[in-house]
Image 1 (cartoon, rainbow, N blue to C red):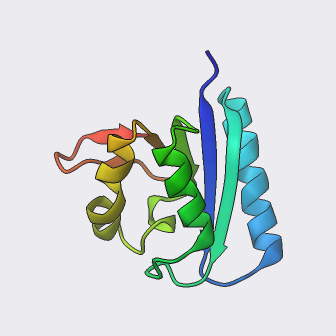
Image 2 (cartoon, rainbow, N blue to C red):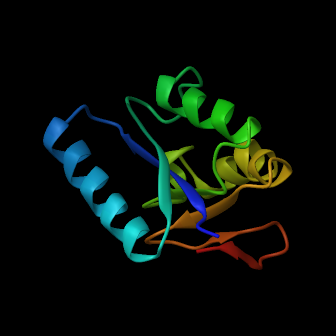
Image 3 (tube, one colour):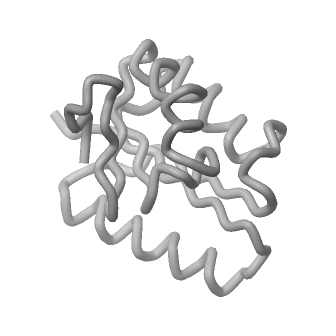
Length: 117
């Protein structure tokens, strides 16, 4: 069975060319890994801003079971630091049955074990 992936891109500065480049990078990587792309969402602006529309779209889709894997280049695209990421999002995605795949950095759980990459 093909696994469904959501791609999330976050840049602090609104740069359409950089967003497009990251979208292509993630899409090509996901397809090469055999994923079916179910959703692509992006945001620009500070990573500590909680009301990002793309992130809201990702969270709602995760809770609805619309994808199996959330893929980003780096885990801090969700939150500014790995510690903040673990505190804010790691358990939420686990509770929804969503795995995380970060292309450039592994995501480690509280026990130090790599969760997904």
